[in-house]
Length: 304
Image 1: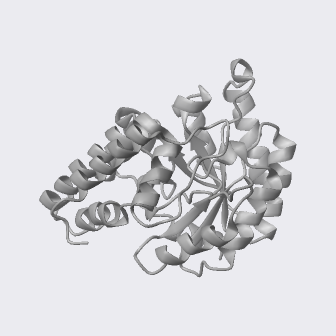
Image 2: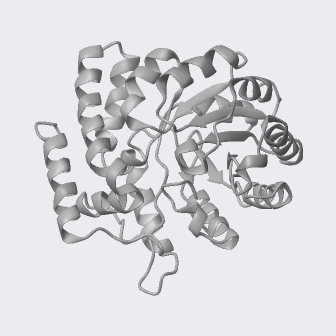
Image 3: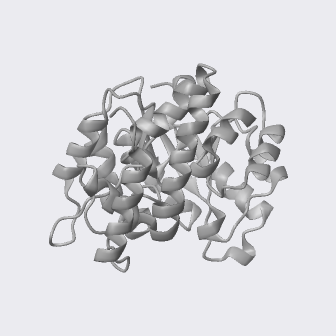
């Protein structure tokens, strides 16, 4: 897929795939493929492997590449395959990104390096992203998730990096709608901004984002896709009603329980979730009941 085609298809709803594990703690590629097979044909614009919801920080580089290969075997254009390849060092990020592209990734998603966060100023981050974008023969997507990294990209940095010919997009997951609106005013024409916070999906679409990469879309695709489709068709009342359901799920599943909550919800909805990788802990019985209750309330009355 050409960079122009990747940009064109980077819109709508893209699920960040979870990484199922087997009883020994290794990746269960069979279950991974089963989930992905069930998602095909329902309207997703693409898929992300080795993102936050996929527990990327807990995966080895080899495991990330195995996921890319497994996904590539099932994903066909115009759906796009994104791979999380951001690491702490620029050289390692370049090497992993190049290998992910060689294995079939259409674009790479790079979280901000954060271990030495006090030194990650605009100059350091700009040099990092430019170096990777110069070295990788596939489009680069910046990834901002300051609630995890402690780093908030400045508007000026985002604006300047958006003008690099191989940096095509930003995934912004802070949930700060005012920040997203300010970003949209700074970036070049044609640069894609997608959000990762479900509670602001509809408002962000109204502001001008291209779409969203949402962990919740893995278990309630009908709600997430329904919001995007209703917005595109101008059915704002329907979009708002679905947004209320999605916000409820965010408040009662993803925000309090994180990846473990998303995986439990997948299990309850008939997908393969399973336990997260240690040191993350699975939900206890009370939390699983809370997730089940939230799902029942959010899906009540929907035509599934």
